[in-house]
Length: 436
Image 1 (cartoon, rainbow, N blue to C red):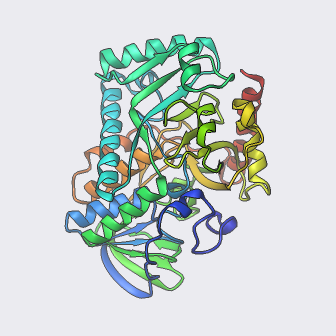
Image 2: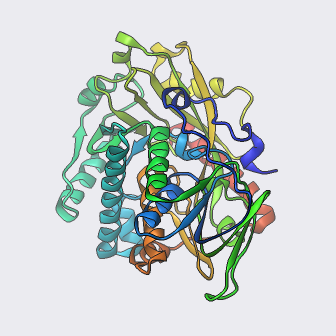
């Protein structure tokens, strides 16, 4: 069973509120027959679209192949948060690679935010400032204050404000949290609008985009002088380089990537515009996420809707009642909104790694892959596309720095890694329920 076609209609956007808010682009024609390009890109989300845009702006001819519509996957249905840093805190990064290299990765993530904001501005997509981190335990606030001081002292970042329980309650009126922090340098946006805007920019720059062009096989080059053949159901691309940008939907196209990057499903709902009731969610139009392992995340959009994400499963299938699955954590956070109606409920597939850091690989000669953004991909995936474009052009410093990070295989081999991940996720979900 293929995750690309397990839960969605072929060639159609899922029933998200974003798909109603953003006018679709005219369809890009499917690939027909044989074509040649310097670079073939597999996947039309942030990573692939960014790669296509930056390659085209360098004058490098490229063909992007998307199985459905551009922005169809996680890029068009996520929570829209542009977070700071890598998926691991800088203290964890320092323990992994030392402070000097941790500073490199922090600066890289700051570059990712700037790039994403710049592309959003070019595409006419508004970005709203402010992402709050909600703490479930008092000790988390003490740790946050130390973290904020550490960032200011060693990383020159002073955009995060610690909030006492009373101050955080004034910002986020929920009984579920014991204080928090507000990152004024982070932001949020309509994620599908960003993806479609990037597609327009890429096409204008000269990239060739084909939708409804499912890549089912890649014959990778055996050496750097050979060609790679990327095969769809109705055509193929013969290319010098291939960029793998499928993330959770990459499937088995590269066993090396599949061993290190695991797809999981996440679920989101949207309410009608709340009007005055929006004050029960937040006193400002910010985005929020909490400290659960199975994280809850939400924001108020420009229409005053609550867009709330919560709950995961590790399966090919979405649950039959997504709304009921997400309503439970929403009601725990906002009891007064327990019965608020939903206008939309949808699921999507992202990808995680063992250590929650992105997996950058060269799976074959002249092949580049970046995936496994672990829920932190709006900015980092966009930067990854540019880094792969740079690497194709011979400037691989950024890509190679990310590729040097450890990316362990999931245990159990091809047969057992999926059941073991299910067991592990169930354990952490139990810890969340017990408040551990």
